[in-house]
Length: 438
Image (cartoon, rainbow, N blue to C red; front, top):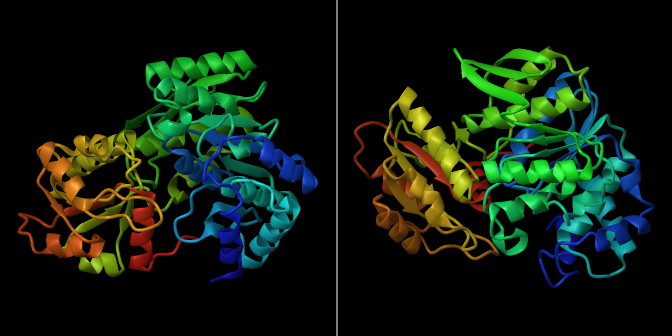
């Protein structure tokens, strides 16, 4: 076990609950650390249900293309905790190295002195400490679970806040309607800081606009104040400042056009000096693993049916299922292939809501368990749910067994294989495939 793995294991025991939304414990620890949160570079704060990480990936790529040093805080990680903390540098940032991470975690552990604090809260404090000690032009800050009582929301005055697509997820913590969830996410909005409100359902958009007005945050609303369209293989962005004719994003799927639009809107609101050339470069360079990522080499690819396309995504809720199914349908329109879905999910997720979007699209669902400390849907139960929706369903003991099962099938053309349902599942696939996250 690495040194920081041992520290992280200890930090997991400091609070009886994994999640306990509050700001008080984080503020107490930050005070003991000398308030690193007051020494951070300008912040763009990002909340939402889906699309946060992709939006940040676009922002980072655009800002770095403009020569900016960009700190980034995201969660969860896929393979290594270090992925959560990227330290900005000239020429492009790097994930925090083990030595710096160990020192920051130990400093926080000592300053906390054994008091109750959640894992996310104490590791957020460690990230702020690292960001405060390294010079940068921007900090891109992703919330963990919510917004209002999320540990990242101790920041008093971000330059801007972005709220990406909101849908039902984490109902036990955030509320059982999209309006309640939107109210919680809107807690990151601050007076005077532009509020970039991404593409939302009408009830969510109204809730977010009302909250922005209440706190005095100028609202820039997708579909009203900025627009995006795909025209002749180009991405056309338009707002009151004019029109941008841009290349399509490197990240696959039409939903990424909306995430890119939110990133562009934020930069045009708070960093108008960023040239169009940097926006163009950022669209074509952005990377975000396990979000509609095509695997082209490695063990998992080798085990797939001959000639198959293999795609990986961490989508795990109904809205994630919708955008995935839309992307697969779009791929099929351009290059028809039979679609096989390998699906594993945690029991806290509505897997049936995800599966229903693949009715008439997936030729078969092969259900697999999700390994780890969390409770996984039994593959037999997921396969049964698929069959209830009218999709042939089978169960397998893991992704490799699922691929072997599909390899024994007779398809009329090499299939398109999508592995989805959980970020934990996606992480295990990347590990088995020998893929790195850098």
